[in-house]
Length: 246
Image (tube, rainbow, N blue to C red; front, side):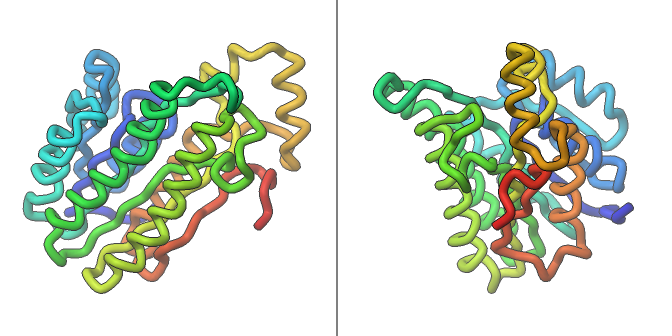
């Protein structure tokens, strides 16, 4: 286990799934974590269940001013290491010719623009102090969809990977690393609701023969947030059971 005593972290989309697992893991390592989510009731319950070291904050990441203010408040406080996990996301499965312009914009606002705004706010708040920024991308961003996410989702996650690499170059001189994790299908409520045949077809695409657990992806986030990962930046850590090996 990594020791993150003295560190502070902000995790968006933390009410459930990968975000919740990442927040819980960071807390176990001694980090003080703010769980942020648009679902006020669920994120408060999540922080309560994690216990000491966790607090909840309601925010719609599309509200860029509120998001930037939250990042500044959390990462601007005294700390030995500041951590931002851009996890908030929405999924759109509409084919290219059916996705509406409004739905396209919604996916981009949540999955990509919010991460850009939070990253920019984090760079300012850290003010040259050590920092870690971890973006939760997707295998869809590397292979152009093909699982659930189609054009809008895949484009947003591909853009997030590009943002990871470009901001890693710019922020390295400040002592901040920027990395991403790219999960494949994760065993969530969404997967559970799929037709059994569709689930089997998906598993057949995964060499390890099963879906990821949210805590496995959360563990990858925790590694990239650790002090031990201080020489890793601009990387995309695949957590996909072997779906993409490149």
